Image (cartoon, rainbow, N blue to C red; front, side, top):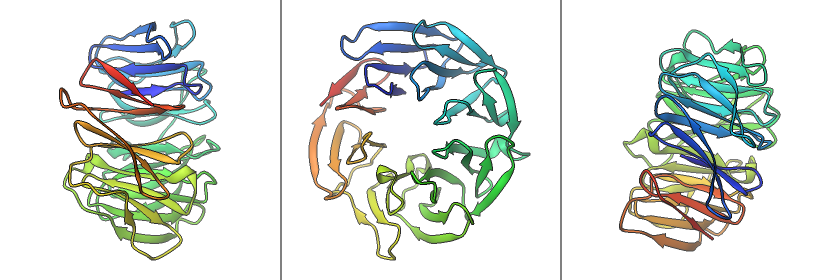
Length: 314
C-alpha cells in the first residue's frame, strides 16, 4: 500500500518484503527504510507528518519518527491487519483477527481500551473528525459508534450482513455504512436513526465495497460495489446516479484531497472523474502489469504497479 504525507513532499509505502519505506516524491529517493520482522500488512502516516505507524505479521506495531527513521514506540499488538490514526494524532486503533480491536495512545505506547467482546469480528474502523469517537464495521452485521477514550458503545447500527465499509461526514452529523450485500445505510450520528437504507449495484466481492462522503459533505456520498461507482444525494429519496459508464471490474476508489475528483482502478486502467458532472477527465493505461493500489497527493496520483515499481500521474 501507499500513502502521501500531508504536504505531498514524501510518500510512505509498505509491502510483503518486511519494509516500510519513506520516499522523497520530488526526486524519488529513499529517505528511510523501516525494517520489520515480517510482511508489513498495514501502515499509516500521522496527520502532522512527523510519525508513521507500521504493523507486520508476528511483530508489534511500531511508531516511527518520520524525520529520522527511528522507532519511537512499540505497541503490544501482533498480527494487526489494519491500523487507523485519529485526526488529532493522539489515538490509533488496531484491528487483529487474533487479539481483536484496541485503541492506543501512540505517544505513550499504551493500550487505552479494547472494543468489547466481539472485537475480533471488526473489519474496518474510522475516526470522527474531532477524534472523540470512531465507527466500526463488523462481521456481526453491525456498525458501532464508540467513545475513543473509554471504548463505550454509544450507538449500534444494525444491518443484515457483514458491514464492510464505513464513512463519517466532515461535520460529524451523519455516518454511512455499506454491507457485504451492497446495502447502503445513511444514519444520524447522534441518535443512531437510519435516514436511508437502499441497495447499491451488487457485486459478489465484498472486499471491493467502499463508501465515501464527497468533500466530507453530508449530502453527497460515493459508493463502490465492484461493478460501478455511484453518487448519492443523501437528503433525497432519488436513486443514485452512476459515475461514468464502465463494464469492467473496479478494484479501488480514491478521493482527491479537495474531493472534487476521484480515481478508479479497473486492472490496467486508471480513470480520473469529475464528481459533480460525472465526466471522465483523464485515463491512463498500462497493459504490462495491473495497477494494485493508488493514493492521491496534492496535484498528483500515484499508482504502484504489482509489488515494486510505481508511477506518478498529474
